[in-house]
Each structure stands twice: as structure tokens, then as C-alpha cells.
Length: 544
Image 1 (spheres, helix red, strand yellow):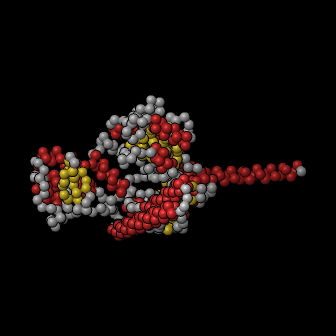
Image 2: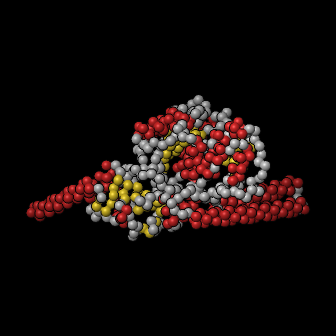
Image 3: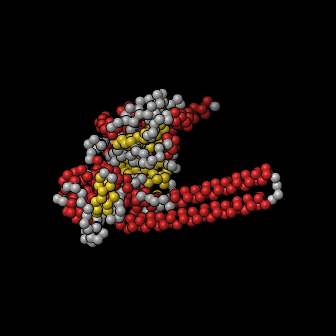
């Protein structure tokens, strides 16, 4: 599992209510929020608890740092824990971080392949009103993650105490964006040669060959690519910190030849999708073109909005000036004129507020409509619009084996048909598509999660929902299905198939035998029930 405290990314302090509003928003998904839990408040009502937490934070006027801690617990793909286990794990993390007794609201999200819990903690203690900022939190969190992985039998992953920071940052950036980062590119393409440089001039030549330049910035060095993207040198490798480099190469010496004048660059960093077994060159070119077009439209539209706003304000000023001149010229008493001036001024202020309000609404609408999209977000949007190639690229990013409950078929039977077209849903029932290509859509009484190779089934799924999942699986894969997961899930699937007399078979022989036994028992029970019904009817007629 992965536990991470989300750092604040702006100078503005975070808002507890805004965070909870985002976490509890279903976002038009039927299964995004699995649980909302309030802890250490006088009420379990979310609205009342939010007011209580905000009042507690406002009572501390001395704290200058952020008063909210946002902790995220994420579990490996397919590994699901009960809500009781999640709540117990939440308690342990809050205790380890020293937040015993602190007010908090936790939200469990189940809209991705990775079950995850957001915990919003009020750093201000509700009784002594003192802020608590945990020290060395990453060490405590990593140690507890290792313990929980062992206790609950979860997949073990590297944590901050056992993982190289640069490698972890690189992996996090590239996993989130799907695009090769400058940091990762330098580590893969140039780091060995950089380390082998014996003097500053050799280092400058190596960097120039890769389209890079080293510059002093603050108390350290940065490496700058030709396209202006920069990365902190020490984040690539500790040997590139200013102290280590100056100790090895001497005092910093500027490059004698500018990188732009050197045309012998054999390599150059350009943001590109990570290496994939599918050729993404055409899709990525289209993505870049759309982003450039969107940026131009956004710039043009914002300029037009500002021009319209300024014109309206100037017109309002002229009208206000005209009104003042008219008031000045009329024959009236001093108090009457004063009242007219005040009315005119108030009308002017109201007009300006309306103009600026309309401008802000139009600006926000334009910003939303022409917002810059990440590569993976664009692929998900394209896939939702029916682009099978974009969906295939997303699904090619999946690594490892899925361990959860699933319904699938042998590869020979895995042929989209009927309800499906090129692996995509024909109608508009798609709710969302994840960054690894899991499609979530409504089918009957349940929500289907389809990653292309299997239908993913969540724990505690009702028998009615299991019936709908089996029906979708039969339409997609045919009547011969593979059922994998926990033993209780496999038996429950067989029971649902037998109870509904579904014409389906399972590739697992013991499970198929169990289904056939249930079918026989169901037929026997049906015959006995029919016989008892006839006997009852006959006895009723005799008595009459």
C-alpha cells in the first residue's frame, strides 16, 4: 500500500470545506464514494461537522502554517479491504502521526482500480487549540505501511525509507502523466556521461551534446533543456549537488560556448509518451495540435473578454459623468443634489460590479472549456468519445496481474460482439475511463468495470448485480466463462447462475461441477414444489 501526505501546492492556505466538497463530490459516478466517516466531532452529520471543524480552526489565531493535513491511503490494484479494516487502518495512521483526538473526515473512493481513502485531519486540537505538525512523518508512515502490508497480506511496495528519492519522484511524475520527464530522460540518457566528466569544460560538452546547460540558481545548480524546461541537478543524483560537483571539479566555471551556437546536439529532450508497445506518434501529434489550438483560442478569447469588459466600464464611466453634469445643471437644493449624486454613484458602482461579475463568469467558462489537458486525460476523453486506439494505449499501460474478483474468458473466446464494438460500449452509458483503460458503465442494476480482459467485481456485490454482470459477460465473451477470485465469490457466482438458470459454463472443472449440482438440486426443488402445489389444489377441490 501507499500512504502519502499531500503537500499544499500554493501560498494560499488550504480550505477544509473546499477539500471535503471535492472529496464527497460523486462527479456523476454511481460508485465513486463508498463511505464518508466523521471522527471526534459532536455529530456525525457532515455539514454540522464541517462547521465545527472550521470554528475550531478559526479559534487558533497564532498558527501561521496550514491547519489541514490531507492523508491518502492507496491500496494495490484488485486488493480490497472491508470498511471495518479500512477504519481500523485509519485509526492506526492517525495515532502514528500524533493526531489522536483530532477532528477528521475520511472518504473512501472506489472509482478507480486502486481502492483509496482520503483523510482530512484538522491539525488544531479541539480542546487545547494547539496546532500539531508531525515530525519525520514520512518515516512513520512508511514503517506503518510495511507493518500493514504484512498483517493484511498486501502486495509489498517500496516506501520512502527504502527507495531512492530521485527514482521515486521520477516514477511518480511519469506514472501520473504518462509522458517522459526531463529528470527521467537525463537519468536514462546522460547521467553516466555526466558522472564521467573530469572538469567543467568536459561537463559542459557532455551537457551540450544532450541539449542541456547547467546554471547556478539559488544555492545550487539546475540543468536546463533547450525547450526551457529545468530540473534541480541534485534531484537527478546526489553527486550533482553543488557541494559534490565543486568538490570534484573545483569552483564553477561558466560554459565558454553557448549551447545554442553548438549544432552538434546528437540528443535533445522533448516531452514524449513513455515507450509503449503501441505506436502513439500520430495520437500524440494530434494531442499536441489540439492543445496548441486550445491555447490560441483561449488567449484570443481572453483578450476579447478583457476588451469587452474595458469598453463596458468606459461606457459606464461616460454615462456616470453625463449624469453628474445633468445633476450639476439642474436647479435644486443642496440636499436634493447630494441625494441625486449619491444615487448616481451607487448606480455606477452596481453597474461596474455587474460588468466585472459577468467578465469573471465568462473567463471561468472559457478557462474550463479551453483548459490544458494532460496526455492521459486526453486519451481518456478520446476513449470515452469512442476512440478505440486511445483506449488501447491506456490499457497497454497496465502492469502486473489483477488479483481481485473477476469474470473473464479464455483468449480464444475474448471477442467483442453484440453489445460491444471495438471494445467500447455502443451507447452513452459510460461513466468514466481510468488512466489504465478500465471502463465504468451502467448495465441493469449495477455498474460494470471492464479493463478489456475481464469484468472486475467488487466485494459485497449483491446477487442481482452478479446476475447482470454474468449477462454482460455472456454477451461479451460467450457462454464459457472463467471465474477468478475468492472461493466465496466463485461459489456465489455459481449459485447465481444456477438460480437464474443461465446457459453458462465455467472453465474450472470443480466450479462447473458445483454449478451442475446446484442446477440438479434446483430442478428437483422445482419438481417437488410443483407436486406440492398440485397436491394442495387437489385437496382443496375434494374439501369443496
